[in-house]
Image (cartoon, rainbow, N blue to C red; front, side, top):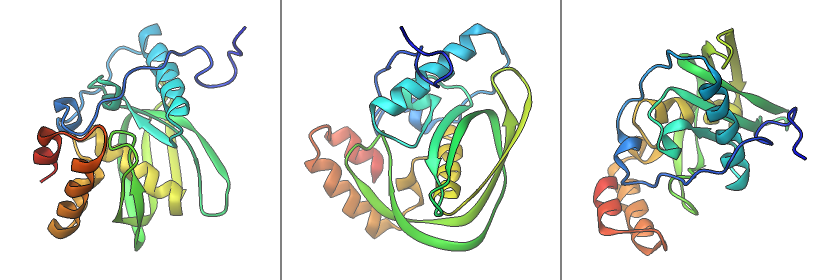
Length: 187
């Protein structure tokens, strides 16, 4: 029997969208229906994120073009942050800009040094339609910015300088899931 109090315990693992999938490169639509389908999507996102051993996952990463993401991510002090945001808005991204390793479940096994702000604030709603505000610092701020980017149709590679993107393209070409289409999409 699954425990309903653990996020993702009632969800199903969905297939992951990879780099060239068009859903990853188009802005997601706002959620307008806060019914049981949304709660099921959030559960599936958690289940999929945990199965892939990630710290965050946006709906378009499982092929759903809606503004929803989940997270279970530590900050730099190793404090765990767990939750989800529907129709998120990145209302602040400030502080020191830090270049650090960043990966993505839609580019499995790869990472690149990506610049992000050290502080982020996201406002949105829960799957029940209640307002939520999430503040993060350090690694968790990176996660929040990364997931908000996904919902705008961006992957972290879009933030890289051209030479770093080219290096990542070579790594995509060597990855077992890499294809010419995926490399072309990156460059």
